[in-house]
Image (cartoon, rainbow, N blue to C red):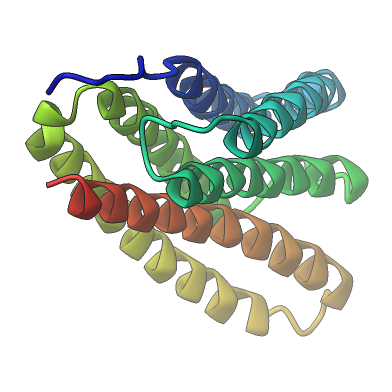
Length: 207
């Protein structure tokens, strides 16, 4: 299709940067489950990335309001940027809780959800990159389906974790810490599904 006004490719750069930041933070969170002695250092790396990502998200939103022509529906760009930012924020919350609560030996179910979150973020990064060329819609749709499968697996693990926590009557403080960690991880996966919903809406509008 010929465009009378050139597309602002910077929008794609910014969204891809947010998706890349999300993937990197989930990898750092995953490392926290494997190397408790590095918790503080890894949290600081996540904090720096979260701060940097906030700046990228602000630039995205500012450009949405400033530009007359956008490569995708401006509301879709705005929503996708916000949802990517929210997902990263939940990853940051999970990391902070691990340090704040000194969770050096987290439950195995939480570690498995962190793995799912990392995998989902990697798939979302690929899907967001595909927005530059919507001829790849079949590939984007397949990536979105895979993220949805991961989110459902996360739901199962979260329910199993909740059942385990209920049985911890002799250690209510640890039970509370674990519950909040599970909640933050599950919220992160839920936000990944929100990103999927936005991507699918974009594909629907650009058929």
